[in-house]
Length: 300
Image 1: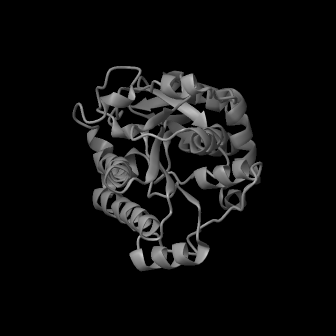
Image 2 (image 1 turned 90 degrees about the vertical axis):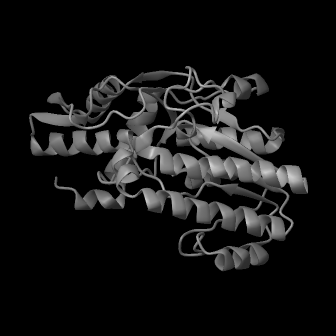
Image 3 (image 1 turned 180 degrees about the vertical axis):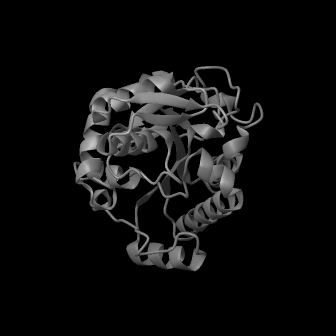
């Protein structure tokens, strides 16, 4: 999702775009990454690749989330440095911050408290990526930077209910319930946790902005500056999708972090702001979902 959005955004720039898909290179294998970088000779790298998933996937596969993300990061950073690639942008996640960090979360909240237990393995891997960028900058003078996007959504998102994040999961649940004529959909937890969302195309625009104008050791928050309760999000999704039934709450399921609103004032002070409102972005994402190839696998 993010990689595709970055490619779309870079098409407006005067540059040659190189991509490394799963078919091109296994990013967990140092030798594969080294070969790709030697052959492609990039001037800059945007590291958007990661093993990602929602609460269920993170909690079920902690070793995979920690191990595979560490392999990706060390392989790409190592190959970039070894081949004199002096510009690299690493993408992290808002889950790097403490579970009960003061809201809105500023960049210096990193490592000031315990992480959310349901996704700490992914968070630790992403924190390691930030520190890798800082370490290569400090020891070798590399111009490596890090950006921490909030919860992202948009075309190309993952709608698998076993591994998706909350927003695509809600879209799929609401759509399938509408098609089946079901009276209800079920929402995990209490519906009270608050989350911030940013369209992937806005994120990509912010990343290109940072590539052009930012060079410092500190990571930069990339968010919309607004959050809402998960239950309210579900209501908006149902309205966009056209599901008229009820939303029930499964209190036996975890909520995750109570709130994750990031302070993106640092980025805004540089002159960047998001453009895509949530409801508009949701509608466009649902249209993409309806037209995407995987849709044929869903009843209705």
